Length: 234
Image (cartoon, rainbow, N blue to C red; front, side):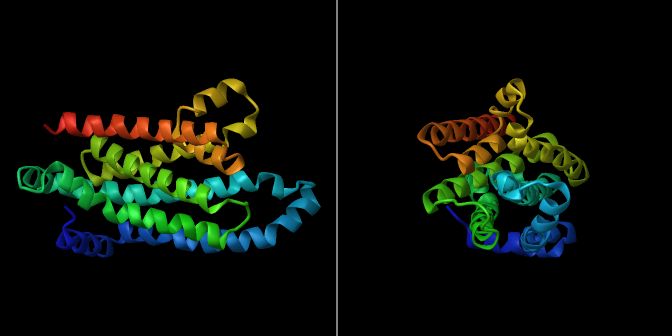
C-alpha cells in the first residue's frame, strides 16, 4: 500500500519549497527556543508579576503540543493542494493505488513527523509530568489532528495561496486548549467539541473518561472530514 517512490517524492517536494521546509523544521526551532525561554523567564515573572508559572505548565505544554499538528498539517495540506493543482489526485484516484492508497502515501510522512516531534517535546521541554502511556495517546491524537488539518485545507482551498490563508484561520482552534483558564462554563462546553481542548485535559488529568472523550471527539472530526473527502471526490 505504501509506495516508497511516492514518499521520496514528498521529501523532495518539501525541501524544494521554502515555505513547506520552514513549516517542516520550525517546530524543532520553536521547541529549543521555548526551552530556553522557560528556563530564563519564570524567575522574572514570579518576581515582577507575583505569578507562579508552574500553575500553568499544563497549558504551556499543551499549546506547544498543538503547534505541531498546526504546522505539519499545513505542510500536508500544501502537498495535497499541489496534487489538486496538477490534477495528480484525479490521476492517482483511477490507478490501482486508489484514493485510500493516495491518503496513506500522502499523509505518512506528516503522521510520522508529528509522532516524533510530540515525543521530542516531552523529552526537551519536560515541564509537566506525562506518563509514557498518556504520551503515546497524545501523540496518536496529535497525528489525527495533523490529518484533520491537512484534509480540511484540501477540502476548502482551491490553491496554496488560499490554503495559507485558511491555515491561519485553522490555527485559532488551538485557543480552545486554553478554555479552562477563562472559568466560563459556556465557553468550556463549546471548547469540548474541539480536539485541541482534550489535549489539555489529558495532560491535566488522564482519567478514563477524558481518554474516552478525547478519542471520541478526535475520531468524530476525522470521520466527518474523511466523509467529505470521499463524498466530494467521487
